[in-house]
Amino acid sequence: MPVRGQGPAGFEAVGSVAVRTFAAHQSHLTQRVAQPANMSMDGHHVNAMAGDGSGAPHNHFADYDELPEGHFYDPDAEYEPDPEYAATLAPDAARQRRERIGPTGRPLPYFPIPGPLTDHGPAKIIAMCNQKGGVGKTTSTINLGAALAEYGRRVLLVDFDPQGALSVGLGVNPMELDLTVYNLLMERGMSADEVLLKTAVPNMDLLPSNIDLSAAEVQLVSEVARESTLQRALKPLMDDYDFIVIDCQPSLGLLTVNALTAAHKVIVPLECEFFALRGVALLTETIEKVQERLNPELELDGILATMYDSRTVHSREVLARVVEAFDDHVYHTVIGRTVRFPETTVAGEPITTYASNSVGAAAYRQLAREVLARCHAE
Ligand SMILES: Nc1ncnc2c1ncn2[C@@H]1O[C@H](COP(=O)(O)OP(=O)(O)OP(=O)(O)O)[C@@H](O)[C@H]1O
Ligand SMILES: [Mg+2]
Image 1: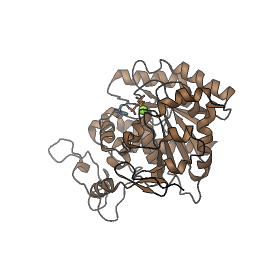
Image 2: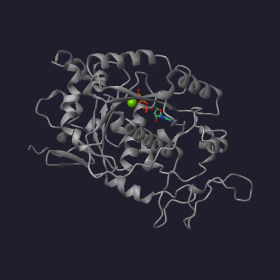
Image 3: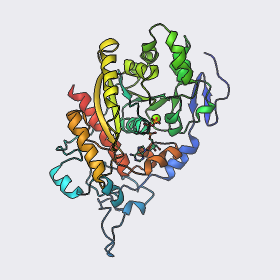
Image 4: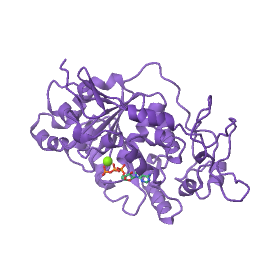
């Protein structure tokens, strides 16, 4: 096996596999294991919003950085999140919890905590897809992936956007990579192991990308079976992972068609704003065409409402319209709008580790459980 030279900064070449050390990350992660919102220092559940006597709501989890020995974060325990985030999710949170009506207006089912796996694979491949830009594809890929990995699933994330935002969001500098998913697609004999990077999240690997991938869109046109190039490249990896999540670029070009041809399921993130549904017809038409002509197994797993802010009538109306249009296809889990997501990009890590007890982290954990529940229902 060829031994590659010094990889990009922060990576070590191990045989032919560049493995990120993440030493810097790890030390800073151990310093910041957060106190769960619902635990007091003596291990009892606390109400994070309980007043401090002054009448003002008080956010306890801001007080503790360290999780005391033997304590753990339980996403299912009743807890009151930071009031500001809570307001973006549900103005009437108490009533909703009592009646278990979710933000989509439907009764909220319980999504069980998935049990551990004794063996892994074959992978379910999920394409995170919407040709509209900035709707939360990359954010959802990273955080759904990290949440699935937390539940013990082996996860591979595929950066399939020449912008390399997924790679950046996991602390990788795309400009410094010499092998990317582009090489895997275009060079015969290239093995995925040579391109794979380990992320700081246990159980989660990355096939990174950079601007090189934009050339693939043009070069693939003259290839034989050009739509199934990614599918062929991922085949040898299927038994190593439980989930492969592909972060698509905002277009319906040949790269996205490759992702849809490789995938079993599509998740469509939709930003809760006025033009959310614009272009969705074109997307569903593309999914149907791929289903008919290239990949009969492909199905729409769900529509994921993102950047939801229930304080605005507008956001609530858009969500109601989306549920009206797509009914049971809309996930019960809705991702609220919070500045914590842009922060995680700068930090180069998922929200599940960056702000483990935040509402955003809890939302993606719930999404992971909902996705797993849908898989099991099949
Ligand atoms: N729930 C959220 N609340 C607030 N900001 C968010 C949320 N989700 C994503 N963002 C921010 O919105 C911006 C766009 O998100 P993201 O990159 O995930 O979208 P995308 O669909 O992948 O975009 P593109 O089409 O350009 O690839 C980013 O700055 C991200 O941090
Ligand atoms: Mg993106």
